[in-house]
Length: 273
Image (cartoon, rainbow, N blue to C red; front, side, top):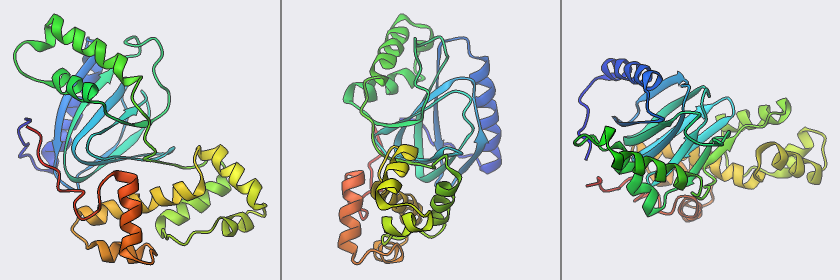
C-alpha cells in the first residue's frame, strides 16, 4: 500500500512540478508514478508529452479540459492523450497509479480521452508496474508487465463517465449554462426550440457533437454536480432535491445505475491492501 503523503498544498504543488520534470526526463517507454492526494485538492491545468493511463484506486478523480469533463471513480481508469491541457480535482482522499506512455511505446496510441472499466488483469498489472519495491524498475519482469499492460489497455471496456462539451458554439453555450444550474427536468424540446431546430434535428446534432444522447448527458451532468457535494458530506436528500429529482429513490436509482453503488455507500471504499 502507498504510504500517505503528509505534505501541505504547497509541498504537493512542488512535488507535482518535480513529477512533471521526471516524466519529461524519463528514458523508459513507460514511466510509472504512484500519488496520493487529500480530499478537495486541485491540480491546476497542465500537460505532458506522454499519454497518461491513470487508475483511481481510491477516491474519485474529476478531470477537466476544453473538450469536457471526465469522472474516474474507484476501480476505473482514464486514458489522457499526450499534450492535452487538463486539470484534476480530488473528490475524497485519492490514491492514483499512473503510467506515462511515450509515443513509441505503442504502434497507435488512442487520441481521445476515454474512461475505462478495469479487468482483474489490468488492475493487477498497473499495481505491479507502479510497485516501488526492489529493483523492479530495471528488471525483465517489469518490462514484461508493462508490455502486457499496454496490450490490455487497448482491450478495456469504455465507460460513459465523460461529459463532452460540443464543438458547436451555440450548443456549447447551452451545455455550460446547464452545468452552472443542473436539473433533472431538462427537456429536449426546450433546447431544440432555443436553437430553432426540430426535435429530430436537435437530437441528431447533439449526438453528432458529443457522441451521446442529451438524456445520458444530463444524467452524467447531475453526477458531476452531485459527487463533490456528497464527498463533502452533504445529505443525499439535499443533493437529490436540489437537482430537481422528484424523490431520493429516483436519484438513488440513477446514481446506482451509473456508478454501480448507491450514494449513501459509494465513498465507503475500503483501503486497498
